[in-house]
Image (cartoon, rainbow, N blue to C red; front, side):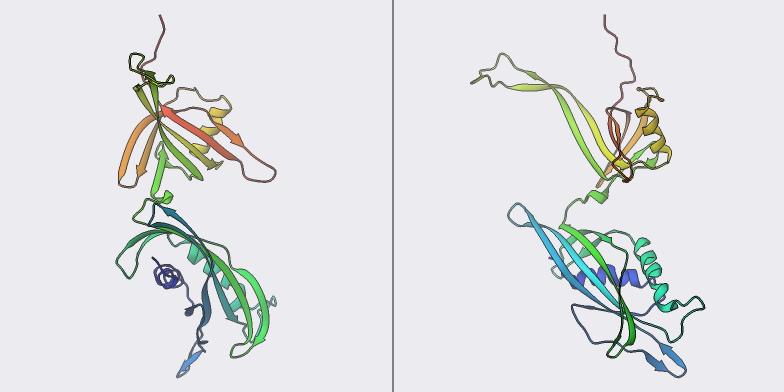
Length: 286
């Protein structure tokens, strides 16, 4: 099982390595690292504590654990001696943006190995650093605090939802939720022995379907979704759909099925779309 130290080394330390700051991040607690001087050069340090705030565990079978962790990062930022012309302190005012950019530019999906050699697929989410309090503190003097929350989810040797990608006409879909299904056309074997009206059955055919919920972005796919829902696009317009499911990739020609656009209050609009197989030969009766 992964430990909080594994997450610190495998994710947190790598994020902060992208910033111009010198961090000293401790798990749970640690000694305050003061600024150091070498000749005329002074190195300032930003001290932080990485702590576990909450844990949720589910089990797949008897042994496999699905783990979700909520962690907190608390930073102590020394306030400079002199403010800028506008009254702000540069050491404090730039911190949130620099740290947020470092998180945003870091992959939110990665692989970690624990001390037993077990491999885990991990995903991470973060919140923007929240402002704390300015106060005079022992060792630091005048200092300001920031706190951000990190969420981790991991499962050993398993496929994560972030490992699945879907593209429509070569444009990647930002899925909020997706579902793959294969729907059979079932026929009952009326000649089989049955009890209580239960009979054997067989599938005459099957069809692969995809259901997706995504934000209503103003892009190519978003425009296609809107046109289809509003009746501005032919219902049988074919689209090239590529699905990468772990190590498997399939490419299919599909059309839109039942689709909707939903909005509530001031929330962003969401599309819910269904993709169904496209039959290139028109079927006629008679």
